[in-house]
Length: 135
Image 1 (cartoon, one colour):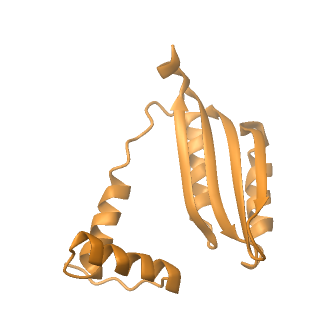
Image 2: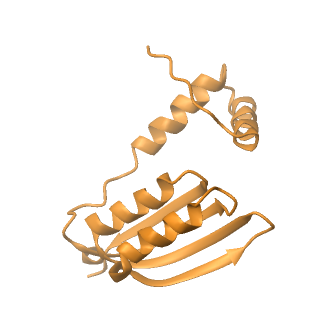
């Protein structure tokens, strides 16, 4: 087994500690391993060339250095995928965005992964719906 060091903000660590207590884990490591396994088991979205629609929702820290600029750049680089975006100011420092996307599964998945991987983005979630499933 390998040892890995990660940095977590206090709020996220508190959530993990709560999960440890409520789910009966022996410690944080077990809880984090289970959460990682669940994330890695998310189903693939099928043929990367097939058409899809998607929603991408995420909360981000407005004060994270140049995050707004990086997010804006990512969406401008993929302007052809975005149908609509809703932006909500949650409090002094947090914003929520919900984007409706349309394109190929591969393009949309790549954009959603890029956005959710940005430092300062919290609670990101993407729902990709291949259009072949609607026929």
